[in-house]
Length: 177
Image (cartoon, rainbow, N blue to C red; front, side, top):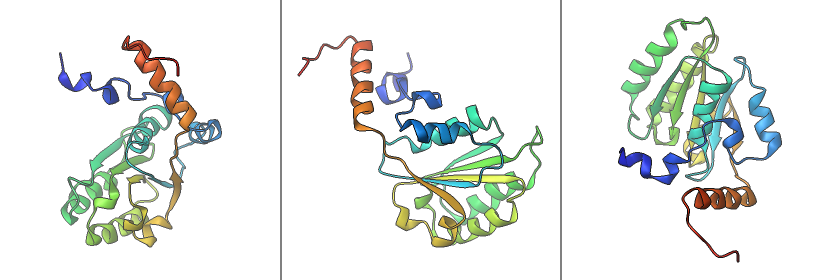
């Protein structure tokens, strides 16, 4: 058995928008997105569902071709110049807009962020960007101003309910109080 799947955070990772613990009006907003959505920047503390929501957007809602980059691992200028620009320059296979997901964009270097700003402008007709970050202050203002920003704050009551569901599924008994 894959030991990675034994981790509950992976085993029970939300797969659809309905699975994510967010206020209903926020879910409805994301459900209504089209390929004409602006660039998006999700920010919040670690573990609040930013990356999961970004992936659900491209796979289930926009159903588009996308490039995923973990910017904490690939944070240099070469990543933007080679991977992102090469992806943005090409037409999508289905004629729709493509999306670049930059997870942990706050890990990009200053030069990378400046180049990214230009790429976001130059390829806006064909490519959208969904960025996630833990530290909003590390994203330069010119990028923030080009994005619709969402601070993800899951509902505490919803989180507790989900934890109880998982405990039941795992057959773990916990006292009511």
